[in-house]
Image: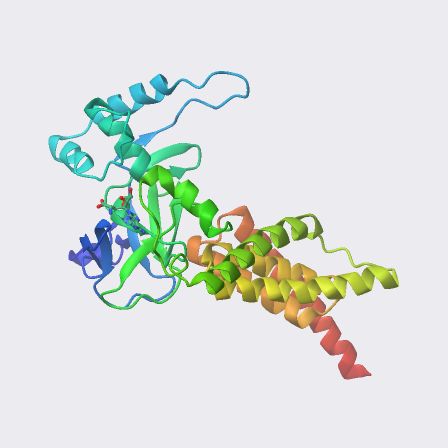
Length: 324
Ligand SMILES: C[S@@+](CC[C@H](N)C(=O)[O-])C[C@H]1O[C@@H](n2cnc3c(N)ncnc32)[C@H](O)[C@@H]1O
């Protein structure tokens, strides 16, 4: 990273040594800490998988052969250099009481791997990041670069522990904890450590958010309702979409922002309120660029096209108002 070609090769750099460091995190083993202020959108880690396996396709009604995964895993591991093997074996392994030392590699994979499309990847540097139910980073797999990118989804202060999520977050504290049991720890993050009343409110918000996403999903078309009742309903939905965004931001669930901004854009387009519709779509597009800077994904391109479409509508409205 200190090489003069770093700027042109920055996509290939394993994160500047100044941005993060791994060191003990009280009660959590090793953790990853910011060595300087990290701004939203800054890349923290860009890392190739050390082990990358594609498990056999899961088919309904056909027994899943764990032995097949074990074989794939073992042959990937065998192909590593002695130094890489040592790095993998130094990772944390949460073992269930029935497992023995022969199962360590599988336990390391289970405790540290992330999905990359249909595959599973082990990224030893990023694997040191501990979990939070209000994480400061988001991550994505870049298939073109063959790297997993971890980036800040909010400002991270110098010396602050960097966090990621291991599980989907639109669940109550109890349900999240059940999922985290496979990692062998009780979460004490700021969302889980809230006092009783505040935690109940947070649980309610997360469950409401999940329901709201499910309710909005079939409404994501640009058709404008024609009936009086339909228009009234659409106005209520536009108000609800703003609440959805506010609740998400209050919970700090950055992984869901793009989806919520998209919903708010469509909900305002349905009531032909073009200015907020355009601004929400653009916010969604800009946020999607954090995970996809070149707008290569279908989702980012859809938001870009939606923003352009809404700008035309908003402009037409401004021209019409000016000539009145
Ligand atoms: C992917 S590893 C993270 C790095 C790990 N701390 C280490 O020392 O290598 C996952 C393991 O870290 C620990 N861990 C992660 N997040 C935690 C948290 N919020 N509280 C307590 N332990 C945590 C658990 O032991 C978990 O099985």
